[in-house]
Amino acid sequence: MSAARQVIRARDAEQGALRRRAEHFRRDLLQAESLAVQQTNEVDLIRIQLKNETNNARKSINKAEDSVANLRRDLIQAQSKVVHAEKMDEIRLEENFEGKLLKAEDDLKAAFVVRDKALEKAKNATRSEHVL
Image (cartoon, rainbow, N blue to C red; front, side):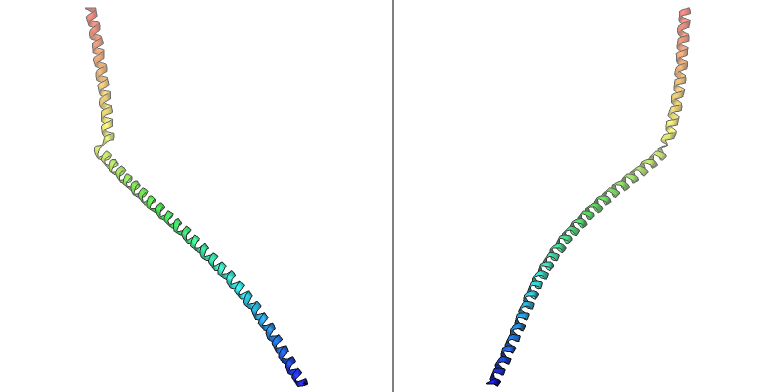
């Protein structure tokens, strides 16, 4: 009987050890599952953040592309205005507007002198008529 009791005690001890190991594995499994759920939630959160950042980056890129297009349009308009101004300056130089203006001013001065002489003659003529 003593040998049977020893076998039973050994078996009970082994079963207790197995139960403790099973409980330990069960706790490890629950912790692993909890950690897996937590990591899955973190991965989902990271995916959402990446998606939001990607959308913001796309919006920024589109806005930058629009700005570039507007700047190009403005640059082309400015270049057109410069070309037009250069062409007008060339026409001004070819037409010699400054020279024509100076000549017109001289002609105007000469016309004033002629007018003043004519007025003086008219006054003198009027005096002569009054004297007679």
